Image 1 (cartoon, rainbow, N blue to C red):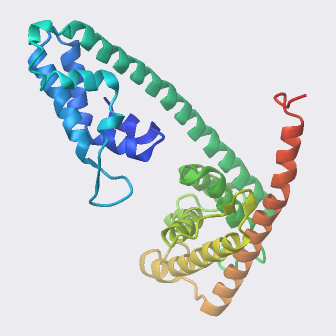
Image 2 (image 1 turned 180 degrees about the horizontal axis):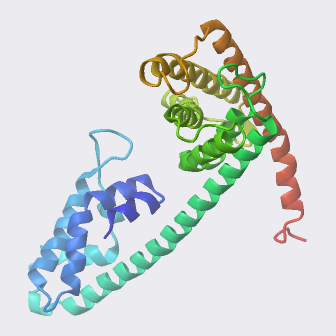
Image 3 (image 1 turned 180 degrees about the vertical axis):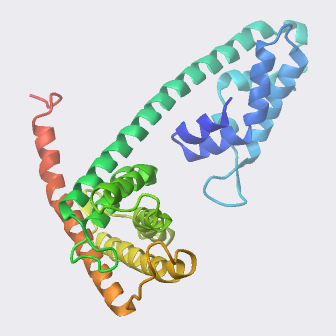
Length: 314
């Protein structure tokens, strides 16, 4: 069994924890069932061990607590484990070949399922990152060239980055980062060899993500109640993302640049009030514009898709 697959693809978080918890004996059992000759005693003992371990599966929701997952173990494994303490059945009476064939077949089916899911996961990962890249680069192109230190009156990019994280999750970070780098190269005419520019790109890509993580930590990340958008949380997200982006970039352009990148480019004097005011205002306005336009467009688009869908009932 492969822990990587189990960690990512089982829909229930408690189920993922169970697979990680018993991964080693499960792998050993699979190997024993495929070995020749079959060792009845070891196979039955290992099945019993897995079943017994399941009683003390770590809880996925409460630190330090355990979860009894024995009822969730598949029937084939439970039947094999039951032979361990059943004195009425001798080893010679157990058709271990049939039992192992069932276990081996289930493992083959599971591995095939994992391969299909992995393929779908990778496909979705690439598609989502490509979409995020196009969206962020396109909106940056519309926003046009800006002066790094002076900022801009409306910064649409941070709004689009925030929207992409809301739509696709943190996995589109790489697509967003590439989009910011490409924007710097083709729109802002960055020096590709400037480490400072690459650091600024990382800050731009990660600031909305930090805002989302902060809101999640304080349980403020519920942006929908049923089908209704929670505007208070959306506005707070925009404000927090703008604040993170402004303060971190100010730190980079002052402390980090002056101490580590004094020649990349030439050190400049930045007025804190003007920088923060310019960046914060532009980030907030850009974030609000993108998210509210997206909100206004979302419902009509969904209605259009549903009304023109081939699955619509007639």
